[in-house]
Length: 440
Image (cartoon, rainbow, N blue to C red; front, side):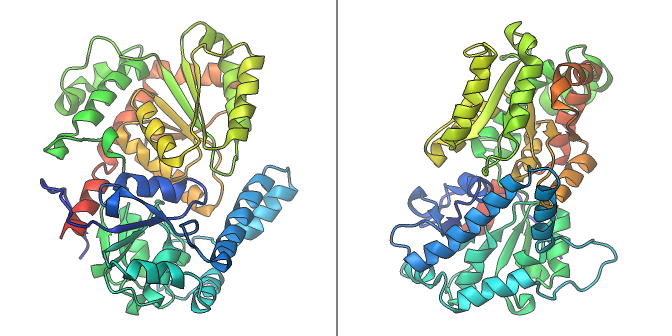
């Protein structure tokens, strides 16, 4: 039987764990970042870019990264791009969940990964970690597979960062594997069982959200930071007070009395993916909202991440619309850790998150309504389905007319309802639940 874990009061770790990520896009690194308190010496290790990595290992990782980023960008080319991406996506396709059946048969991609590992890919990484054997937590499946193949002596954990997963996330011989999984959703937990993972190796923890956006004081279940931010957010998302009038009792039950006014203007954050995909949507948003931005009715944060070219691209468009320093902000950092810190801080005064349905889908549990940009890949298709079922996300309308449809929805109170749905239905304690398991 699957267990749901709740946070512990005393989160002290004598040595912690090896927290392993990969610097391919932002998803796996963002998933690892909230686990820094667990990481040995507070450092997260990149399996594809650590000091001393053998050239042959680095080249394999680089080929994977460049191929994914190029195919993601190529997808934007009409017709040909979609066809090419569809062929690629077929190899990582997530099969239908129903009818429930044995899905443990490995796919081609998994055979290819194991073939490379058995030839020595990743041996250097695991041998280094063996010198100080600690629990190993990987936010990508490949390092977990490497650890098992090369006989890592301690527990091996894998954090899933999507609402559903392909067969590639489970090892070649799942029934004999010792890899344990932190599942963000019940669907992931059930899916892993269909792939042959033993139920005792599956922990339904929720996705690890940043503590600074959830709670930093005990007892953490009080969610004092999250509730404070949501209280101010609701005022901006419900300008006509329609949602508050209808669900005032529910709001007071969870948040207490709302403040008299919000501590920030109505703020929309748009994120550009790690491969630079969909940056054009951001420019259409600011073009459509230019008058309202100048009239101080809305603030826009465009997230460029650590990509300087994307920052420059967005800045050119902001300047061309005479919007520089006028309720527009580009979130950019050269360092990945600084970027995540800045991003999490900016989320505190963000009212609407506009993003493709990546790992950021889980951030709806912070009480954030999600405008869903077009998915890229089958895993994002299923993240989108999860958000829609939760009631906290909506597919984007035409970005060129954002100034019309977004404000129409604001007046109905829909965004306030979506924010509260995310807060009520989404799992917020993932980081603390993972800490409890490792603390044992």
